[in-house]
Image (cartoon, rainbow, N blue to C red; front, side, top):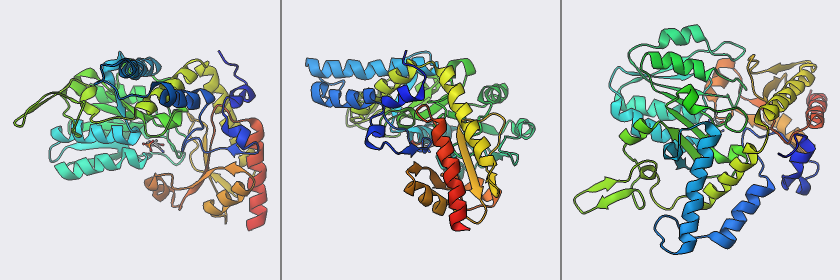
Length: 404
Ligand code: PMP
């Protein structure tokens, strides 16, 4: 098992040898890639490249084997019962869209309701809003408190017989809040309501146990888990995937085709029409190997402590206000600074080689709730250090002097 020391972990990420001064604090947007993932991708293209499933020759058979093997690794990582419930998608967004259009829409009737929360990323909001609009259903929004915690009493009240779906983020990309998805799933299931958990931010950092929690769907992206862009996972309970019709049609997803009729392959193939991102899958497999070898609870504790450390340092700065101060939170720190626009602050920090994100973070309703145009967001992961948090706080102070 590789050591826990960030310096040791950091050495495995080549980007930092090319940018030795870089404090990369935009991990909620995408993570950097370890050598193992970069080499794994290159090795696939160099030594192994072939299309999958339809080839009889050995290169294709081996590529198929590797491709299918990754489903098992992913299933093990997130506590899924087996590879059959793991669908390759292009990312969390595509997974959520698939569930909204293929699972929900056909069963949504006028007057029904879909529940999301006040802190959803647009990717876990718009697909449900569109489905509701199409079906004449209503989008219900679980409210949150000013510190960014969901109002669980209100949530309980909202669980009526009209609700046909609950879609909830596990870890908010803007507030850092970790939601009690297991408890929320149990409450929703008591009313027979299926649950999708948006794991885009949590898959890399939290222990995931989809079968233990009993969630119906869990979606995430490879690129936020140290893997390639353009590849993601949708976990779905077998009985749901069986019942769902594909929404994209083409090669590699059928049993039989005539001009009159087509019968579809079993899941997950049914949802993977055309040539998929094969190399991406292989790269994702390398990323899953990478995180699986770590002591995940210890890494989580260290990264969350780092987030707390950054908060403590920033809290000393007069005129700085955190957006999101939930008791259960990941290492995502959003804040606003009096009289300094988030874009100006991020530009100032960039000149100091500190990469943070500024804006609405694809959560415009959160900005509306707080009445702000955007926040500056620093998001930490396993290669970040206390020194980077200190640099961030020091340069935010400098920016404040500069701009005011
Ligand atoms: N949900 C959340 C909470 C996210 O943070 C993101 C990415 N910012 C997404 C969904 C969408 O992920 P992707 O863009 O990789 O599909």
